[in-house]
Image 1 (cartoon, rainbow, N blue to C red):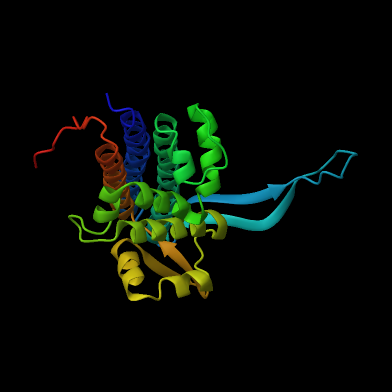
Image 2: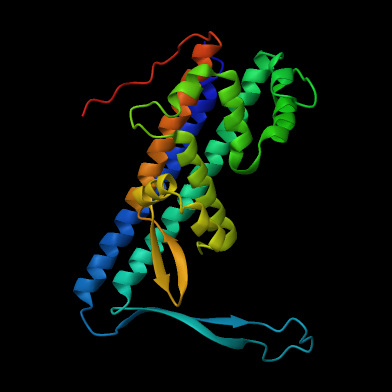
Length: 271
């Protein structure tokens, strides 16, 4: 029994659910958008409209206490195609951040499990203390996490020659660690910058190999002098698949280098 397998299985289950949610929404939103275009072929016909209001919390005497912000939203036959694209891109970006969070937990869990089963790794990885339980190790291992989980990737290189060899020498001929670092940057842009590309990120992807990785999945939209990340559901699906492959490489690498039973009963898919 491979004691690491439960962690990759958990990742597969949760990320598949997130990926499926995105693909279902893509199908329904795209088909509904097409129906609306066909059924309401009138210029600037409003399909959905809303206004934003607020109540004055300091108005203690009651009475009329609902105010219009003068800001609203209107979905019309004119902006429908653009809005469908924007909405699906937004959902795709959010899904990718969630998948990244699941992968982050996977890294933390699989390394914690390995250290729990092999306590000598505490010193090798320079953890503050040595513990015997999974939960205690998991708390300690955060000390080596680093920005964008770079500390975890360095730890994998340190303890797994198999991983170090194949993170760049693989079927895609791609440095998966560089690719994963890019996804970490994207996650931060989505969560902390509301998709807006900042000068630091533009400088980051200026290097040729990073630009090539970025262009493989993402595009940049420009409106009102603002540059934003754009992602289609299909591209987000591809990112999830790459993360599955990266997770399996980590699982296989640790199993190989630590002499754990190669419990690889995942079924091959015939296309």
